[in-house]
Length: 256
Image (cartoon, rainbow, N blue to C red; front, side, top):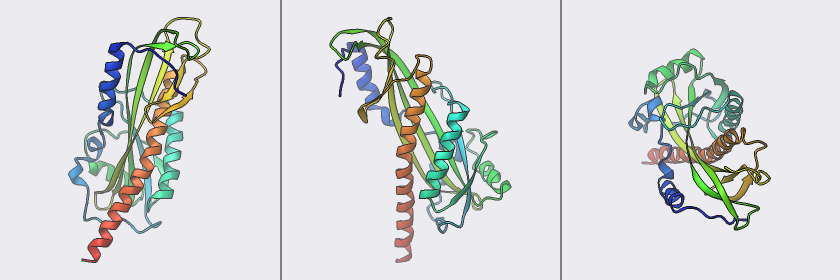
């Protein structure tokens, strides 16, 4: 259930402002890797189901000035494995391998990405760009979920995962989609209330869910992983919808 809390006028105003623009935070980054959205091949058909070999390239973008720190290698590896399984379940391609993102830069060079796929003997690439923004600001945190409060800090994380399916033979982006996730970390700045803190919430989409990291030191890392997992969870149905919309348009075009 919701816990009682008192928030300063400044923190409340800040929360309202960031909620209003959360859909744009962090900003989309995919165009920096595959070129402008106009490069999407609307006339390029989707491949037949299960015959196209693809690779997955997962890029953790931290180039923005307010970007959250990069996820640890183990977390990125686990994220890549999850995405590979989800894409094989949802997309009309067989993702056979996860390719290293070394040397891939936000220079908008789609031809370079296509060359990576061709060198690996692949027909397609699924390029995934993950990014996140974090801010921290003072609040009052509740003690024992009562009306008694003490000074504390809240850290908000907005995570974004974007995916693009690229036909490396033609150099076309076939479909694109994104998923966004949010989570917040509350912690006191005074001693003797550590029994209830630090705590992570999935605000604003699941405000009743909470998780207690084992230590204050590990809490920011756990926050980033949880927010990114939420973004991945929302990416996959959006990518399936993008595939469905394109396939529907292809079928409609054949009937004209």
